[in-house]
Structure formats: structure tokens, C-alpha cells
Image (cartoon, helix red, strand yellow):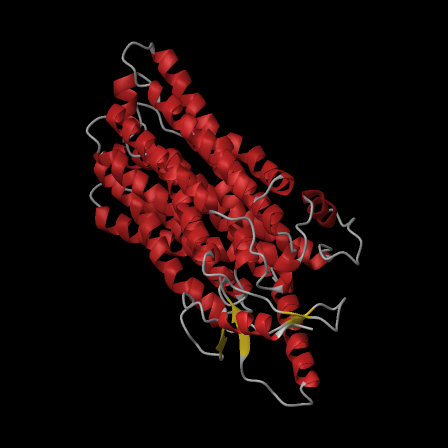
Length: 499
């Protein structure tokens, strides 16, 4: 029994909400009382906390800063080559090295999160990131030899690749732990698109800095200023917002067993053959599309400069991909939460083939004096690519019921493909005797063919959203029990507690 004083205190800390079509940012979101199936006599009240938005803001800022080093050298590759004496291939490897270290680091993040928690994981990554920023800047010293400068910059990029995955991999897991089914996709979108926002900011700032040396100082200052935002992140609320959030975090090896068909059927992480096929299709396409975007932003200046476009134009075109994508994602993700709730796979099937056509069109679009056409294509590519980013991550979690593990696999594939794209496209560079010299036309053919060939497989994906189905079933069970306990009398209001 609860005393009258305790009951009064509880009521003062809560409010009654009725179902409305309010904004996702309105904290008065209706969440019914649910019942733990193992303890039917003790109803469980799921709760949303206002401080969840502080954590989202912190992860957004961390992802923005973490994305900058990868895109920083793209628009200024020619200037860096001239000032430091590096070859273009060496500059490409400054981005490639980051992606290579990112690949195994992404897989390690779920183990670190399980050993510690989301908050401590972000602390560790932030510290490594600050150290990386100043090691990278130390490479600009005039007293260093060309080899010494390159070594320090390379070490800075390697350390960045070690820290970067933490902020990306934990985003969907944070959404699952703090948000309900009506806002999870949108929150994942906000944290995920922060990464391309950082890339866009990097492209603009680096291309407008007076010298490459001063631009690297700006990058180090930004990194140092933003990383303390890790202090804003909490691991999990005292009371979960959904049934999925109330479950223990599964071990990464359970995902490995599920993908191999070895997970017992009675486990929540068990995957059917159809789900395993869908996850493979999703991972393939996520890897190819993320790899294409990452490699193009890194090689922007090298693709465009042979045709007469300057570093400022190249930087703006790279930023156009990312900024247009952010705008489109801001529009489509709330629709995914409220309108296309059960049709994420259908949205991917529509958008991905369009992306294949757009990447293929660059083979003919990259030519002299066609900046307007290129800007249009870049905007369309960005709008489609960034829109599907949070959708693909959420669908990966739906298929596996393993938030951090499935996302780690997706980012593993994306950065692995980025390494492949950059390495292969660098090898396809034309010689000095070509017209125009050092053009990447063959690289554009490779890129367009690989992307357009990969996205066709999306048409064979079913994409059942098993996690959402489970959450909605638990909600219905909770409402039915409330109705039964009240003698058949329906209740239009439910209590939602906030801190």
C-alpha cells in the first residue's frame, strides 16, 4: 500500500496527458502504463524525462566535431600538397587511415559500452579526440621535415579514427534507452545527421582558411571546445520509456550468433532467415552509399580541379551534399515516426534506386563550366543519402533487436567501403598526358557502376520492424489490463512522469 502523503507527492510530480498529434519536442507525449508479463499484479509505468534532450544535444555536438577531420583535407588537398610537399595520394591516405582504424574500432564500441556504459565510452573517446587534434596540429611546425610533418598528421588521423565510432554507434542505443516509439527515429536522425553537418562545416571552414596551417589550428580549437559536451550525456533513465528499453543490453556475440543462425529461438535477439537476408542487404547498401559519400567528400577537389573548379567551389559542392541532406532528413524523419511508421523498408526501396541513377549521372555531369548542374546533382544526392541514413540505422536495430551491435556493423561496412572507394579511385586517376591531366573520370565510372549495381538489391528486402511490433504489443497489453482492472471502463488519460 502507498501512503496518502506518498501518493500526493507522486501526483504532484506528474501530469495527465491525452493523446494528441503534438510536436515530437513536446514533452507531453502519451505513454500508457504497461505490465511486466512476469509480474502481472504490478503494473509498470514507463516514463520520459526532459533531460533526455540534453543528451541528444551533447551527442549532436560531439558528432559534428568528430566528423570534421575526415572531410577537412578534401577541399584543400592541392594547397596542402603545395605547402607541405605531400603527394595527392599521401593526402588521400590521411582520410583513408582514419577510415581504416574506424573499421575495427566500430566493432569494439559495443564491448566498451557493455563493460562500462554510454557515458564513460563518450568520456574516453572525447579524451582521445582532443589528444589527436593537437598531435595533428603539431605537424604544421616549420622546423619539421616533410616526413615528420606527415607522420604527426597521420598519427592524429589514426587516433581520430579510434575515437570517432563511439559517438556514431551509441546514437541509436541512446534513442532506444531514452525515447518512446513516437520519437525514436527522429532522435536517431538528429544525432546521425550531425555527422554530415560536421563534414559540411569542415568543407566550408577549411576551404576558406587563409592557409592549411591556420586551418588545422582552427580544427584543433573546435575539437577542444566541443569535446567537453560528453559531460551532458547520461547512460540510461531510472525508468525506461518502452519495453525494448527495459531489456538488458545484449552481448555483441549474441548478434554474431544470430547472424550465423546459431542463436536459440527463445532469445530476444534470435533472427529468422528472412531477417538475416534483409540485414545483409541493408548492410551492403549502407556500406556502398556511405562509402561513396565519404570518398567523394574526401576527393572533391581532385575530381573537380582538373575541370577548372577552384577549392572554394569544391568545398561548397561538398557542403551542398551534406546541407541538403540535413534539410531533407529534418523533414522526413518525423514523417517516419508518425506517418510511415511501419514502412521504413518501403521508403528505402524508393529512395535507394534514385540514388543509383544520381551517382551514375556524375559520369557525364563533371565537365567544365557546368557548376549549376553539378550543384543540383549534389543537392539531390545529399537529400537522398542523408535521408536514408537514420532510416537504415533504425531498420538495422528493428531487424536485430541489438541497438549498438547492429549499428556498429553498419558503420563498419560504411567505412570499410570508403577505404575501398578512395584506394581504387586514386589508382584510377589519369596521367599527366590525359585530357584534362590527372582527371578522375574512370573513378566516377567505377563509383557510379558500383552504387547503381548495389542499390538494385534493395528491391528484394522485406524489412519487418520486429522491435516496434514488440513495443506496440506490450503497449496494447498494458491498456487491456488497465481496462480489465477498471471493470471494462476505458481510460482516456494516463500518467507520464517527468524529472
